[in-house]
Image 1 (cartoon, rainbow, N blue to C red):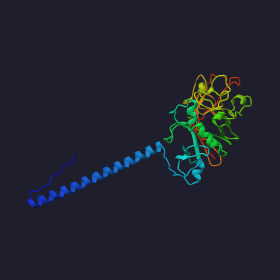
Image 2 (cartoon, rainbow, N blue to C red):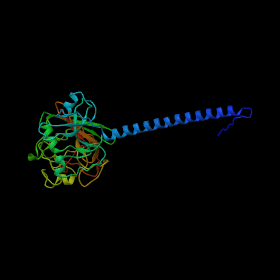
Image 3 (cartoon, rainbow, N blue to C red):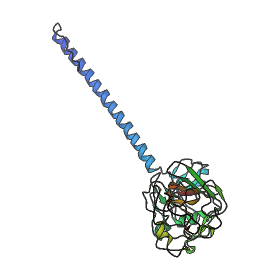
Image 4 (cartoon, one colour):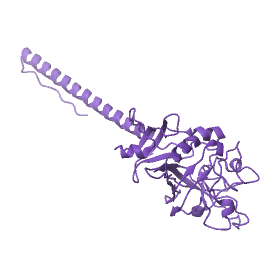
Length: 330
């Protein structure tokens, strides 16, 4: 600390008083400047915290009274920001809140996302029917609902895109034309068309003709732990801890248990996309969505652990494949 004193021995009383008042005024001015600087710092801090909360929460964009049947229409109308919007598919009795991904060409209606294992996907039929999960956070995990999937995919021709990511940071994708989900009376039966991509054709099981009869998800009905519609003599949904279009049981299961990378378990219950990482590696993240003229479901893969002790013979194969986030775009 450095201290100084004023030598006022030769000054008159009036001069001393004037100097004291001047110094007091200067002190008040410095204190006012300090207060303003502290207020500015606090405002900047608050704005930074608001930005962080906004990014975490996800922005909601109010489009007014105008109704859009999917995110593709919103994108064509000029809205290019990722975030939550309200849409109303043609058959839906009400408007629904969706997350629109405006990247990769824009207009993707995201109907499923897996990112961190914070949400349980081991749910009953009604939960999958109406949807569940975090529909407020930008990276929240959710399932939009099978009724909503039916409303969306029955109003136009959609292409399904599945974007996968593993725990090593690698990415793959799978695209299926003519993606449709039937109504509840038909158990939300799944239909899809031709595959393209670099993740492998897990949904149709075409990677090996000898497993396609039990591994394909084409035409499969949706199953949950309390509603068994698969072709297995037990319950795939109960064993694999999630609702899905199971056969006997899967080559792909994007709603499985969130293992973190390679895993060992009684069944291959992870987030699986068999042609890429096999049954025993659970993917990291996934999403699904649809664009303007086709429905695309981006999915990030979860990492599944491969149990080297299991003999991967064709006679042993019964299930494979996971995805944890999905969406669509026309």
